[in-house]
Image 1 (tube, helix red, strand yellow):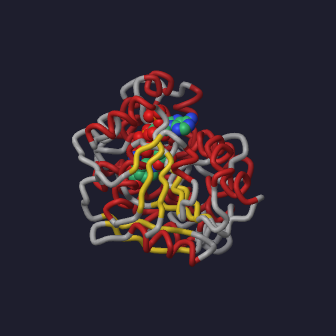
Image 2 (image 1 turned 90 degrees about the vertical axis):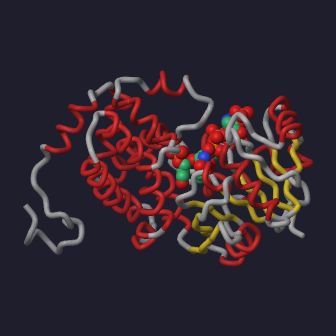
Amino acid sequence: MLKVAVIGAGSWGTALANIAAENANCTYLWVRRRKLADEIIKTHENRLYLPGAKISTEINISTNLEQVVSKADIVIMAVPSHAVRVMAKQLRYYLKNDVVVVSASKGIELDSFKRMSQVLAEELYNGDNKNLVALSGPSHAEEVIRNLPTAIVAASSNQHAAEMLQDALMNTNFRIYTNTDIIGVELGGALKNVIAICSGISDGLGFGDNSRAALMTRGITEIIRLGIALGAKPETFSGLSGIGDLIVTCSSQFSRNRKAGMKIGQGKTVKEITESTNMVIEGFNTTKATFLLAKKYGIEMPITEQAYLVLFEGKNPAAAVNSLMNRVGKHEHEDTISQNFFIR
Ligand SMILES: NC(=O)C1=CN([C@@H]2O[C@H](COP(=O)(O)OP(=O)(O)OC[C@H]3O[C@@H](n4cnc5c(N)ncnc54)[C@H](OP(=O)(O)O)[C@@H]3O)[C@@H](O)[C@H]2O)C=CC1
Ligand SMILES: O=C(CO)COP(=O)(O)O
């Protein structure tokens, strides 16, 4: 029996721990706050993050990081991306040598622009990523906890590590594919949140399905552009962790990023939205990081740029839409058309 440790008892950590336990792994869930831990132990429910869903009685709930992590075969990091480095620094002393560490977080570190597996590699393995896996794909915790059929991706440069996670978590309702393109899988998971915020803004402005479809399609084009510049394989973005996660996050009733975008479209600010929820909205920081990354690499990302201006420079969302719609006419595949033959 494998020992699986999940770090972070928010929506995603709780749902993943539940799957691990239901799959008969010896499962530990690290909860940051004593009060919440006591409540979960008493009620077998995480009322703060997944109200109404009973979780397995087999999960060992604990606030003691050493107890949760030591001797674990698999450690799953399910805290917001801004907390991943700090948590990794705290738990590295307790890890056994051949542990597989999984990043379930979807974000890019502000300032360093690093992906979560890069952050973990630095903090845990002196920069080496051979025991690291990124878990990503269309998977709202609210549906996973109800065992609704879901398919996602475990990506690693080490196929054995990805397969170990696949074996531990896969079941009839939770299908896991492996992939070796960890760069593409992580970037797809992080960058779709930017477009999901835009999709929410579009909905908040009262636009329709056409607008959302346009944002999603032109959004993935931007993501691919930056992804290729950062070393990802283009085909990864047509998979679950790319277009799959983009579709679900831009259209789901559960997406925090989309819902935050709707509020922006209705006139609320990033500060007001952040202060009004206990849940992480990864896309805010990721919009900033992606905008700066695109500038650094000279990549054209007009939707991301407008999102940045709306979120952080006070640009009116309707004016941002105008800016996008009134850009010069282009060929749809201008990136791939050879030379300037067809391009205006
Ligand atoms: N929700 C989902 O459906 C999915 C989420 N993800 C990704 O998983 C990650 C976690 O998301 P999710 O579970 O939804 O987030 P939630 O907002 O639901 O929960 C966040 C969790 O992280 C803890 N936490 C917050 N800040 C810190 C910190 N500084 N140090 C340690 N722990 C902290 C919170 O503890 P406390 O309660 O004490 O504040 C809470 O347990 C994100 O990167 C998200 O994009 C990926 C796939 C699906
Ligand atoms: O990544 C997710 C689903 O795959 C969760 O997205 P939200 O953070 O927008 O809810």
